Image 1 (cartoon, rainbow, N blue to C red):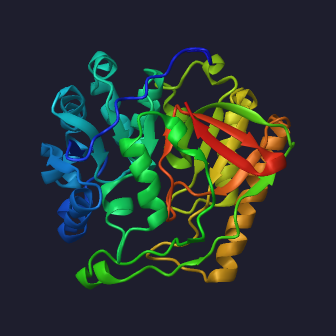
Image 2: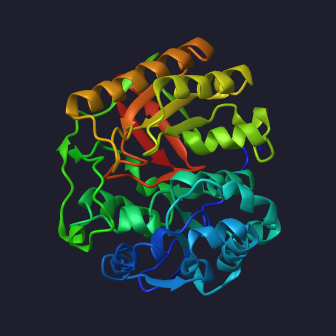
Length: 357
């Protein structure tokens, strides 16, 4: 697939449409049904979409691990169903790569449908990318949709674009969110559904590297999942298919060390992949989780260490690529459901990021 090849943007949803809810990764809905139900309620009340729960949503994570073929079947059935306009994931996971061998690519290619999910859903986003189908890095039920307290206006605005806009030009020039959070509220406590997470002012994006304007179609996602993809080596694009693309990178609540991120990027560099990208967008690093909160100073230091690591390795292997840090996508909130396979332009001189067809 070359840069001139056409990617398909699946048809937009309309308010009132039916959307499939599937669990192609793990499934915390069975552990925290009150959180899951809040996400479904928001699909109905905020976006006027009708969630249709597919069989995997009723299975726990242990069962799903043992039955990757059933997870794949739900995905294919959802895409093939003419009454389904979009496919929304419950949550991520860690082993979704195991379902890919059970997918029939022709079913997905012949029935392009808008797909929404982050984290381990990078596996499906990259699989769809190989088929020339644009997907959206956002919109997961138990994170974006079930945000405690209320959904952020920033997230709602951009999800509406991802759901209902006919073409990707509707995203246009992005802007940083005014505030952000990476706090976790314990899902085991139902009272937390009414609490708002602690936020802090968003200092904006950080641009590193040359001030050259670049544009290209996006590829990538969660670093941990991409690392698994690179180790397996079965579902990667041909190296030349990454020429001129924009690399998407973000790290999860696992909070990998700067050394882990460096080793991942060096692996991409030594594989001859990192040099092929025109530019890089890096999501804001999540610097705390439910079990570990080192405090605001340590969180800021963690994010800065990650910025320096990414900037250093990209400059070594691809000095012509501008890099933008702290873009609002991934595991922090609020977020933009960036199109994976959509076109992005990075203009460092004017500090502009634009999304389009």
